[in-house]
Image (cartoon, rainbow, N blue to C red; front, side, top):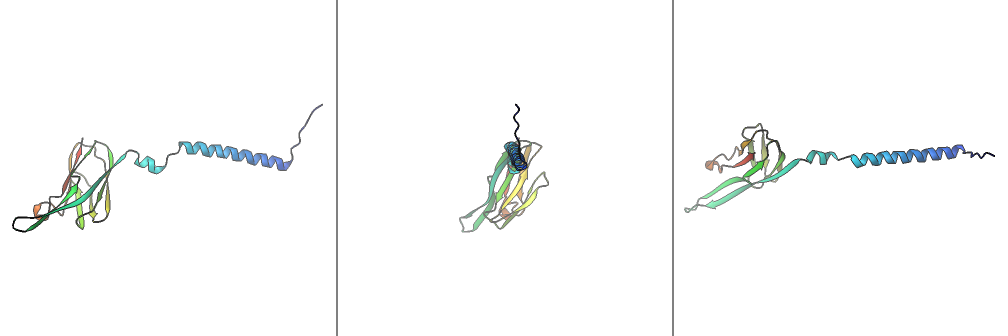
Length: 150
């Protein structure tokens, strides 16, 4: 004697839909386990270096007020080929237009704003970050930071 099972059309549709759901869920889960967000990938090997603009003010013995502007920290160190984001926050002074000597990098740091400068140097050496408004003591400078690449 043979036993046969009869499956009706509605039941076949339900079984098919459940199967599609299970396969889709498995594929989605497998893909999510291996996926890394674009933000994590982009920032994975990029170091952030924070710097501020500062001001020193004093009076001389005869009562004359003098001031100078500085980048703080005044020296940063990078490895050759290292990717970094230099984030300079403007604290003192309305604006500081700058260049990085030996490169095409230039920009302006404004008071109350952060300027982000992507850095990556392929040659060793010392690069000067120079505010072109404050070049020497007659212009309340020199406002220079050093980027040392080893």
